Image 1 (cartoon, rainbow, N blue to C red):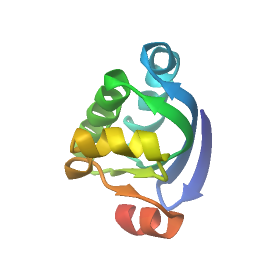
Image 2: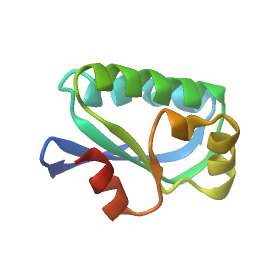
Image 3: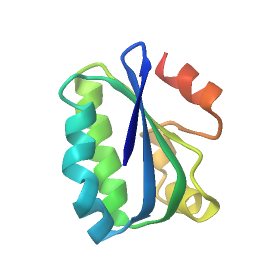
Image 4: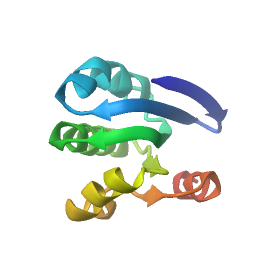
Length: 110
């Protein structure tokens, strides 16, 4: 997990690998602690995430709800095709914006 401060109370978080149970267990606490306490906006770059399981979906939904309660926003950026299919099947886009370029991501958190 790489964290980049984009200014304007916005972070870009780049995730890597698989968001299955071991992958989520490895990053969830840090992921949540990086975004939620300050109510920051977060653009989560998923271009290097090759797989997502239900644990990954749960993590995103939980963090999105928590950050929303603090008036922040979470946006998912550039999921690979297989990951995007999981998002579509789970209707995740109804809860969290999913975009495919950084300009749209910045607009979604503005």
